[in-house]
Length: 398
Ligand code: NI
Image (tube, rainbow, N blue to C red; front, side, top):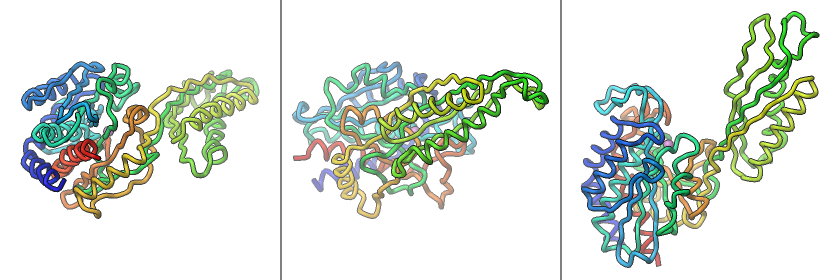
């Protein structure tokens, strides 16, 4: 397969300028979750230009395309890119800075789309050299619940034809451009949101014996719920319970009737995730009751954990080292952030891997979701090349 690898590499190098221009266009024109209308139009135009048939308006703004190689029924590999931007005001002096005030591609989804379009162009060029079909999935709304992946699956994106494997790529500012990283098995956490309303009986803060103080109850609850992490969770099961917001209508001398707590749960096992929710209800309600108050709890279900298929990820590791060299592929740590690629990986063997986009010399080091986030655009060459290479290797695998 040496010559095929060389063809992909040389096409990726040839298309780098075009893919960079695509990324910059998308970066200038970011759109929020499920509102990626112009983005979808732009992707459709490119696919039309490349002569790749597609279906649009999947999950509102998503696009699904097929590139058929020799013997298209043989096997199907899906490649996924997410499309949405974030409600962040970009701080950048580049000429591709966002022109949509308050909206920014701060999670690199512009680079994901550009890479997938580049991979599509390459794969379409070499479609007589692989056996099977590549399914391109441009997914809306990764950033907000319920997430575009779930909606696309409900609308049948994993049927007709059903992929045998799916790859998702995400930029990674902690990894140098030129490298990629991956991890078999559990990689990214499940996420849920917790809303607790603690109810007491308000009154004058100087007459505490005549009231039921929800501020005190809420304070105990925040502390007590940490025992889920420190005493209920197995030491080998990473778990986070965090509260980012406590609010009430009280004042220095007024105890309010109620206090609201808002937080998140992150972990990696579905059964433990369910148990955490029960623990939160039991501990919070038990505590509130013991202090004369009560609790209302609402837990909004977010994304499941991203669990990469062990075999597929091992093969991807080998494909990657063959394409980039051994020292350019890194094994990643588990992360407590979340990704709705998990829904795809629950249905089909999946591999969600990271594209290095950091360049300290160029000063490109900002974190994802930061107003100064950017990528080293030279990484787009690997971004498109690796996607195309993974697809071809899987399809041509004996
Ligand atoms: Ni992202």
